[in-house]
Image: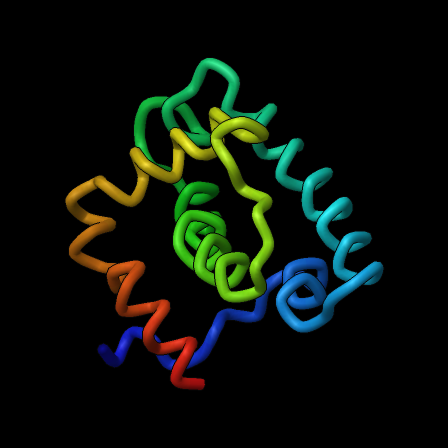
Length: 118
């Protein structure tokens, strides 16, 4: 499990959600929601951000596909849901189930265990 060393340098908004609570966390969730809505809109009519095949934007968005859900779960925050972001959640499912992605990334369970151990 050498792939998992530490959480990636993520957006300041996500860092705040994960590390704070109360009113400040609520503000950070609102800000993150706006950013995720932008991504949701970019997926209209597309399987991946660039179209029918994985591209650079999808690879860059691996943080959202794998790390974000884990960090939100550990923070006790429900943000990336199928009700709020159906296209983005569908993209996460498709992306993480691509054979090359599955071969490259750790499993969600391994990532959860690793972050909990930190």
